[in-house]
Length: 167
Image (cartoon, rainbow, N blue to C red):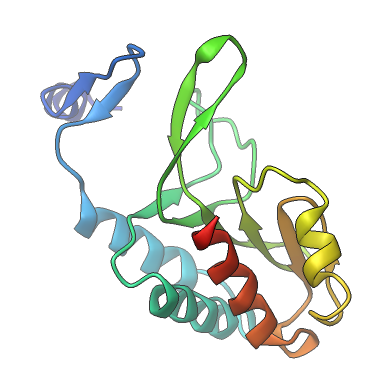
């Protein structure tokens, strides 16, 4: 990262109560542009499907915090697929550490699309509640993965997202 940008960003960062860095301001426009670029970087039909799902999630969560994670760690190494996040929650880790993170995630993967529903305490809930009725998808403790939105019942996906936001 260029020194000028590093200095600029440092002036907008302050430690929280756990001594983690937190932005003093939110870069909403930057995040929206990153999301737009990420969606537009996908080939069709995945691009249109991600856009459809993005708009669906924004309809369900119209005032949510938006996140964009590029999938790289602090050293620039790719550690995951890029993903869009919606909402905000505090995750608690062992030894009392906490981290702010999104509640709903959306990501393209090599075989299709993943929707992450983060923070459900019962790791069998998502699969037992929605696995049998969502359609052709792999449902785990926090992820609904499918090849195309034509393979799933989109209203059931919306129900799962709404359900998470009430927990």
